[in-house]
Image (spheres, rainbow, N blue to C red):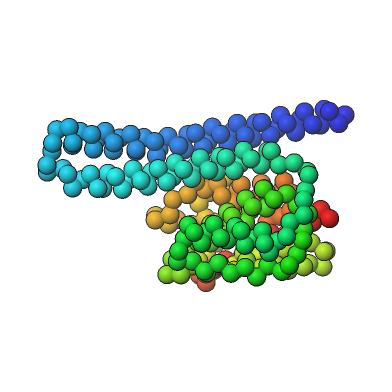
Amino acid sequence: SKLYNIKNRLSAHNKELQTFGMAVTHSLKTPLFIIKNFLNKITYIIKENKQSHHDSIDYYLKLIKESNVMNEKYSNDLLSYSSLYNISDNYKAVYLHDFVSKIISIFLIKYTNVNIINNIDNIIIETNELALEIIIENLIDNSIKYNKEETPIVKVYSKKNDDKKISILIEDNGIGIKEDFRKKIFDPFTRINEIESTLGSGMGLFITKQAASKINSSIKLLKSDQSGSIFEIKINNAD
C-alpha cells in the first residue's frame, strides 16, 4: 500500500541519517581532541610562565584554528545532509541566472582572489531552490578549494539538451582529479585529491549527488585533467 511504502522510505531515510550522523560524530572527535590538547598546552605554558616555550604558542594556536575550520566543515556538511530530508516536492520557478549570481556574490565576499564567471542563460526552471543551492555551492567551493592557481577561475554556464533538460556546467582551472579517484568521487568521506593544505570532510560531492537525486536530476564529471575539471548537472525541469 501507499502508506506502507511511505513508512519504508522514512525508515530507510532515518537509517541513512543515523549512519551519517554517527560517522560525522566520529570524525568530529579528532579536531575536538586537537583543540582540547593544545589549549591545555597553552594553559600550562602561561600558568607556569615557561618563557622558553612561548614561541610554541603561535604554532599551537595555528593547529587549533585549523582544527576549528575542520570542525565547522563537518558541522556544515551534517546540516546540509540533514536539510535534504526536509526538501519537499513543492517546486517553484527559479530564474537561473539571478539565482547563480546570488550564490557567486557570497563566494566573492569569502574569497577576494577568485574570478567566477556567470554565463548562465536567462532560463526559468521549476525546481527546489535548496537542493539546487547545495549542488552549485558545493561544486564552486571545490573548484576554488582544489586550485593552486594565483587566481582561480570558475565558469558557470548552461545548455539545453535534446531531451529538453537543462544542463548547468561548472568549469575550473584547478588541479583536476586523478584517475584513481574518479570512480569514487561521489562516495561518502572521499577526498577527491590529496592536498595537505586543504581541509575537507570528504562529504561534499556525496551530498551534492544526494541533492541532485532529490530533484530527480543527475551530476557527472565530464572532464578532468591538469588544466581543470568540468562537472555537469542535468536538471529535470518540473515544468
